[in-house]
Length: 347
Image (cartoon, rainbow, N blue to C red; front, side, top):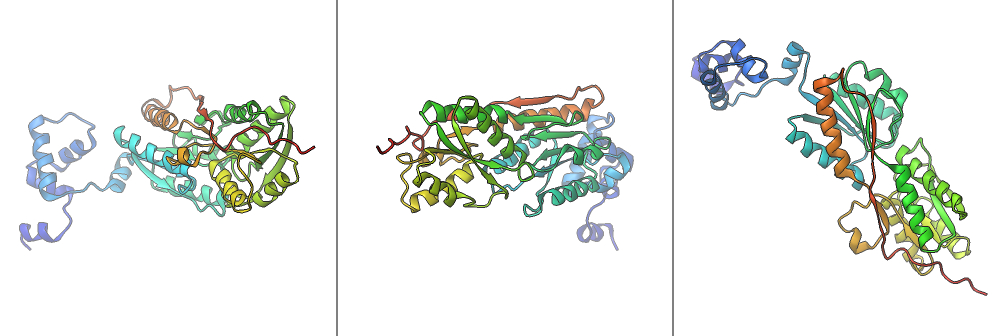
């Protein structure tokens, strides 16, 4: 088989690039890896040969030779949820700008804890050089076995492990913000949808912060326990009944999605918002939020993603000298038409 025919029918190799550029295979490897100085004219010939042949480096083969894949793994919770979707987009764009090759794994949301552990194993199997963990279930003890292998940055979730660099939202502060906004509108009898930590750590922290702040200010809190992740109308009918009974005048949800599910059921059942019940959520991500008019707390996803990518780059370069910290970023409240004063009690 002639060389021209071979090049036309087979995927080009590093040897083909070396032959076309008139250099050694080792020189091509150095140009691709950027690990040693190569004369500019030689580098130009190699890059021209790569372009001419359409050569694509085999990352897995390179990782076996260099012990580095050039990849950073991202473990991400359900990107159908607006907050996780925006976080994914921000991390991807910022990683591209930082020359980090991001590979994302989204575990099944039906069996979160077990699926997330399996996903971590899959990412390590791809020989990633670092891990972003952006999910609300997996615990510190689950991350511990990976810390001696790769640097781990926890993104957008409360982090307790002293070996994991955390870049998160200040969920306690956000819970306090939501509670304070309800109190400023005059509400004293308030339902709070409280999510179990086994379902979502961020939702749980938010809800507990709302509850503690309201009780600290003397409000009557009516907890409604949520035991599933992202179930559309979970407990919404029960909360609607509490409104009709006159038990509550407002309700706080740990996510906008849960709040919007309640608004749908409330309006279908004839409840007036905010005439009969005020509603606040948390996330503030949807671009349609202003049109919907949901009062919420806007979490600082962009700032958290930007800082997380910067930290990952620093850890990859200076892992042994960079101290582990748990950084928290605060968002802001967004008042909206779903909040109003409590309805007047009938005499």
